[in-house]
Image (tube, helix red, strand yellow):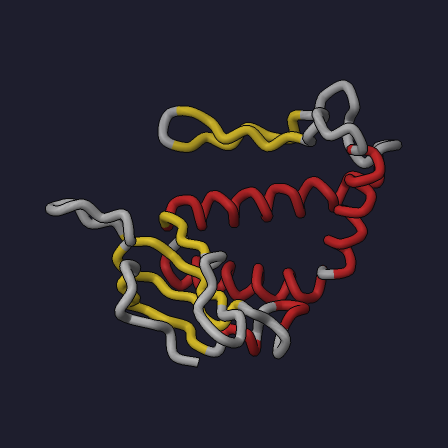
Amino acid sequence: MKIPTTLKHKPVIVSEDYDRVDGRYAYNSDAKGLSLGLAQWNDRGKVDISAKVWRHTGGKWSRQSEELPLHRVLDLAILVCRAKLHFQEAYRYENLYDCDKPLIDRIGLQGDAMNVAVCRDNEKINEDIGLFSQALSNDDELLGERLKTLSRILGEMGY
């Protein structure tokens, strides 16, 4: 399915037919494409690049399509990687985390740090963290393939 080019987000680099590779939703996804392009919130004289997930209901493009600044896409990737790293050793804790220290890590970014922590405000955290851990485990092959690809590309870029 072709990504629309007449809307406010202006696609430059696209991955059409993303629904064929959308993880466990492959071939049954409403996420029909990904794009990198000119952000819909651009003001005159200021241009930002954004990433967009294009959703299609079967009849029309969905308002649930998401557009994110590129740094947020990378911040989400950092968060996923740090969470995955935590759960590699989480079995050591009775509740899959140190209840006395819910902060997993502080990752330095631009002079400050992004906190990565277990959400103790969640009333059912002990149940939900177990479900989260199991889902990570179930998707290990799916995520691992993408992380290896990301690692290879980052290496090619010199990172």
